[in-house]
Image (cartoon, rainbow, N blue to C red; front, side):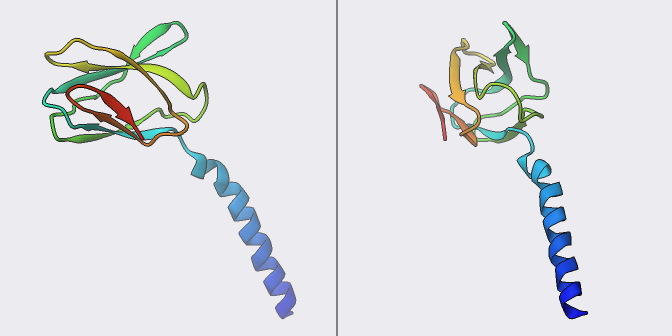
Length: 112
């Protein structure tokens, strides 16, 4: 009886683990840290031969905003642009599958 109970618990744990795996994969999430003196007023990514503007992006100097692709599919390397209130925008590329943070400085943008 005890062995059957243990087997049932192990089986349930395995089923729960397999069922939870897709949920754990989730979507590509990252944090954008504004370590510059300029306000960030937008964010764009380039896919399917066009720029898409993300909604709700506003990061004041010294602040951090959590960003979410709401997907874990597609290319890992996708060009992006950061839109500043008073500064011209540049284009960057990172491997979104490997990073968790975008750090915006006055003279560069880094990822880790």
